Amino acid sequence: MDGKGTEKAPTGANMSNRSFPISDPICQTEDAPFAMDVIRRFGVFDYILYGILTFMATVSLLVFLEECIYIYRKVPANKKSLIIWVNGAAPAIGTMSCLGMWFPRATLFTDMFSGCYFAIVVFKFLILMVEELGGDEAFLKRAGKYKLKISTGPCCCCCCCLPEVAITRRSLFLLKLGSIQFAVLKTAFTIFSIVLYTNDNYHVKDVSATGDAIWINCFVGVLTITGLWPVGITFIHLKNTLRTIKIVPKYAMYQLLLILTQLQTAIINILGMNGIIACSPPFPSSIRGYMMSQQLLIMEMFIMTMVTRLLYRRQYDPLPEEQDANENTRMTDLTQSP
Image (cartoon, rainbow, N blue to C red):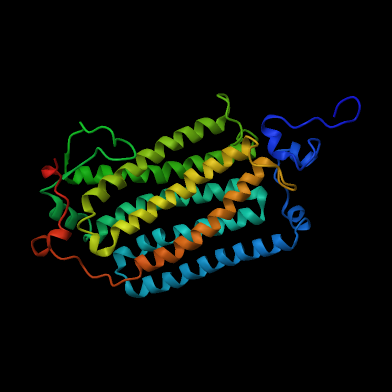
């Protein structure tokens, strides 16, 4: 407002907020509204949208529970918990997103829970690929004559000069260590972030060099890359052997989960924090970005829940021995790669 009481034109990041006065207190704040404040502003469309998304999240959870019953009845004991963890990623993240949609002030904690769950799934997926071969001993016996290609994404995909590594107990231990450190340290940093948040030291929007969030997030990013690397190495080595159990589409769903929960969410949140996403009371720009991310994840996790149910609902027969395997189920021999 100028001295004559007229409103100034929006500039910069506020160009997307034309439909709301610049002086609107909701658009000026960075705080998320309470759940009841959101519900009081509901219109017919909002009731329909929230109802459909809640129904999707509920169905995803029920489908997962039904799948757990099937797994406990039909799957060998060494794979039960692994498949349940991997299968539960989409419905767990969808449920957390639904809670974050209804309770905007809880989005920080629901996102943290989803991130911790995904970190555990990274490790569980690696162990599941090994268990599909029969466990550590069967893996070493069957793969001992091959070598591991370590110049793979996301860490060293451009380092073609890296040597191939013999498959031994030590190399298998290092692969597991690389993934489990992500699960353990991600959870530890999440707990540490919550402690800092309660002391008003952790602010997601504070990207300055003196802020705690930027350093924690950068370190977690490094942990993520090093945690995903062993899974990529193992998949490249086993993709032919495990092709009969649809390991390629399973790995594709695992990669898609990574993109949707990490990359997509980060992009939308950055757009919101920079005011590119318009303020829409009761949500300021940054919080509206969080809400859009939660709503998209609910729909995407619903679809992923249905797809993963089809991929993992099968007869779990042991794989044929190496000498009996055909060319399509032999391990990838990287020593003969051009």
